[in-house]
Image (cartoon, rainbow, N blue to C red; front, top):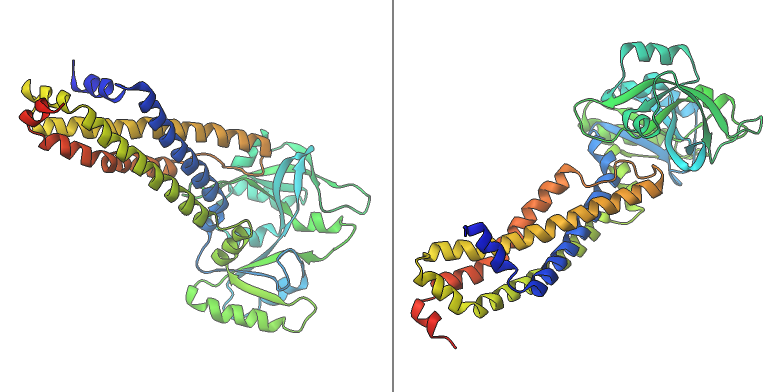
Length: 385
């Protein structure tokens, strides 16, 4: 019998207890995997943020629009290298459950402000030729099986055309990726002029503006100049960094990062005490067994490794089961959400963090029992009633 088999048999010596411990650990890692993945998806826009990129919104609320004319005025502000604008479209494909994250933008300036968005030269030329062309993120194109040349009606649950229709007929002319970054491309860019000219109401309005300053040190001055320009106007503005804007948007849903830390810390602390105490009791029950093993020639260091490995194996089995369930759970949520939470899943970073926690958890809970077993003398072990 090799050491691995011996460790496995020792771990499941009392099957009911082992299964209950595994279920406890599994629950903790299920919670960790689910919350960490949701937090990653909600904060993915922050990862794309640049320190020299600013966002200007209506001071009342970012859901309130700004006059289209503001875009031209901001282009002349000292310190602004490039500026674009975007408007929330509220899109869906065929059925309202098939959510499409769509923005009406000026494509030329948008791609200048977001140079990390990669579109081939041929596709950029096609976008410039026709106003009904849209650029679709690679993830979104894969989700709906769209390819360059496909035409479809892009509907809005907010806007209506002056002919009463809520659908804009568009053609996929470009597929976007993000250069050198593993971030979701789950959105669509609709050309603003095509969208705006058909609107039944709220024409010549934009949602927000995005500026490049080229130097984060200029941000405060540029922000102040823009907001002063529109002070005391019917649509006053508030300008912040892109990262701050993204964070404020996410925080409307609650501080997921804080919730994650509190819930996971509480779960792990509780299970740490339960597993640690149980492991100590289990080794005390096997005192004579440890004495026999030492009598048969097992060294103290080998006994230490054996007991510690039991704890690590317990943690790995429970943790992997928990993350596996998190994968299934998040996959189901993503499917039910109909694309409203694209990219939802247990990512590589979450797996790495979880594996590190599993190993640390196993080592911490197993260290004291392993140390006690290593120090145990044969005479004391065999003489214990």
